[in-house]
Length: 422
RNA sequence: GGAGAGAUGGCAGAGCUGGUUGAAUGCACCGGUCUUGAAAACCGGCAUAGCGCAAGCUAUCUAGGGUUCGAAUCCCUAUCUCUCCGCCA
Image (cartoon, rainbow, N blue to C red; front, side, top):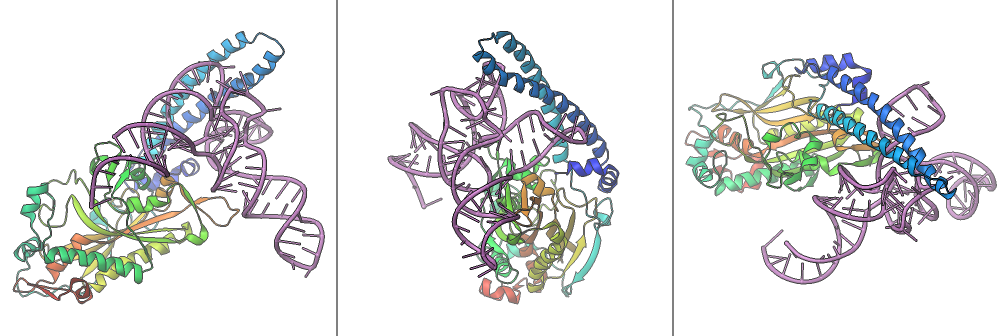
């Protein structure tokens, strides 16, 4: 959610920043509503003051034996006027809140300006691309041939965009989850949590998935509960409506969860394999910190995500998303993209974002610098560490041998229990 | 799923026969007196947000509706918590 005070005090600056994200008219609309709102508040509050004053005098007048009936009648009329104006105020309030809640975050000043993904900026490439003397096979082909993946049966039981892992495939997925969690908890300093997969509407609003993107989420039949699209949602909202002490920060959590996405609007894209599913596994990292620390924290978060790819010896690159491609809640986002031989390009495997105070304002997450200080909003960050299914796919594709077998990365062998799948 | 009880300030906990109750009291916290220092004792302060140039006003006792001149207090709904029964991994 946006800081309306900032919009009031620096409208031109906000206007310019929003323009880099392709949003126009926002500031003007907010200011118009804000002025209307304040005019009504002045009006309705003076009426309420009058009513309170008169109501307070009624018991006194009664005691004096005076007839209060005419005063009550008069106040009844005032009361009706108040409720009418309160309704108008509520309409304007709702409209303003809707606008502030459905408009994307301001970009960081360090986010490159650009209109879409074509203007994202590559920061670095890490690792050697595998040299193959044969045509690389796609991961779904490798997986099905080796009996690790069964998309046909998955479709039979659940429809399209689901995966069924079998045998060593299920073991590999599980090994990856454990490997990632262990790395983050023992080496990168995260505390593991295992949150619920179903959350309430207000929780989804706290991190920015709602109200704007309701069609992207799976909604339960009670109409108020949703399957989580990422662990970021429950984990960040652990601290909803709380005031943390400075000593508690930074908070660092990692969590494995299944993630659920309706993938509305992506029909026809990535229809094969593990890349785009309604249900997938992900290990997530969430960091909550003081505002002046958040960009250092973002670098730490990125490094932690990279540590997994490095250990798995998978080639990847890091890009900074430009203003036009940065997600709704984020001020700055780095994407990690892993090399996918059958695609002949890099594919997103992690997204590490600093949301600054955008989610904190929605979820009311604050901290105090010391015991007598005024609470301030924290900054929240989240990043995948990593998308497990895509990591599975990357391992199959990058570690495939000429005979169709898969050589397991060294770091994963203790978790997987073998160094080869054939 | 059935029956009942509850949700009040950072915490604990009054009020809940509707009217100086934004809310007693205790604890915590902040400032001070005393003390070599600390503790204790004592004195004072101590919610949040909105609106207003300001004085100040308005709102908030889980949330949303309703009754009333007036609601923490009465009524309805939702959410959560607890107890008992049923069911269950």
